[in-house]
Length: 125
Image (cartoon, rainbow, N blue to C red; front, top):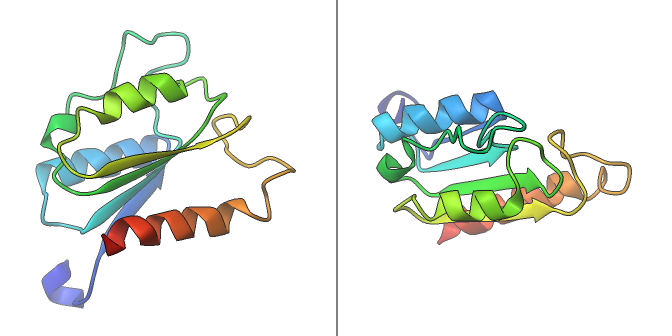
């Protein structure tokens, strides 16, 4: 992909799409320069023992996680613990009071810009 299009390439996804993106990049580390994962589904709701992190140790690409503090697919603490499995640079931005969908009336205007700002900060390092 990089050879065909030139320039920098990034990949991201929301929920299951983010899980698939992270699994792809764990298997193909040179595919992109960074990952943006919104509402990563760390485990099925109500089943915290069924973690979806087996590939985290293979991630060599910087990753930015954006997750709501009220997300049933993983608490902020669970995500922070799981992210420690990733050997690459990884950061979590927790959106206070947000559920799996992230957007609330109170953050609709500012959240997209905040996500872009944080992602650009990650990829500039």
